[in-house]
Length: 279
Image 1 (tube, rainbow, N blue to C red):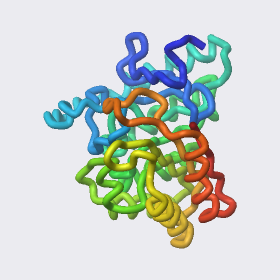
Image 2 (cartoon, rainbow, N blue to C red):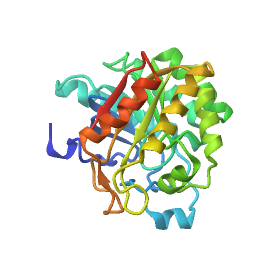
Image 3 (tube, rainbow, N blue to C red):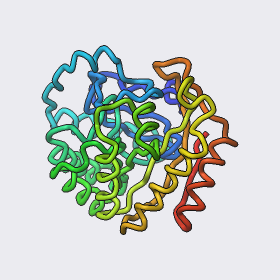
Image 4 (tube, rainbow, N blue to C red):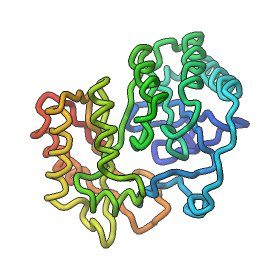
């Protein structure tokens, strides 16, 4: 594997591609084919640990340009063919992630259908599709349909939950999206199909210098338990920390020991649900 595909470096550009890239992903457990629907690097969250979003772009609020599904499909077709020819092993997934929030992209559903057709005709017809999302847009009708589509054709939603309380959510995710909306969207998705919850924890000076305090960890674990109590299903919980340099350089990763302490709270609250740690 070339150095630029290391797990600590996630370039969103590859060759002449605008939207499709390949990275080594800790949480996917190997090569992941990324779909970047927002090369402008804008997002409706401004997380303290982000290594991508340009705050000046957030302030400009430049509209996303239209995306031609056939251009994305062509890039994906070429990358999957290249990976098959390289013989380095199958990629683990196709992940809608990139430089912004993919669940707010208008036209996600027809694009996903087109890309699934590309996958089906490739050398990797069982390659799962993953949506990596902060959860803010998954209540839209087309995203609900996309969740059904993913579940029917081999895929899943990975939904972010970095906090258990509103103040901590505000301090870490720094967004105008209400916390109750995130919780409601996550609960609704988990009742529809099993979801993966992804939780990022890090050291944030002035907010969480040693990571989330004990009360916050307990509140976070209680939120996860409430998902199950309300009829939701969790395929897994991912507890991880920063692996690449964030835009705010005083944000630091937590130790594996600290992550295991946090994961232990989730394991106690969620018997039978896999809780994985990614230091």
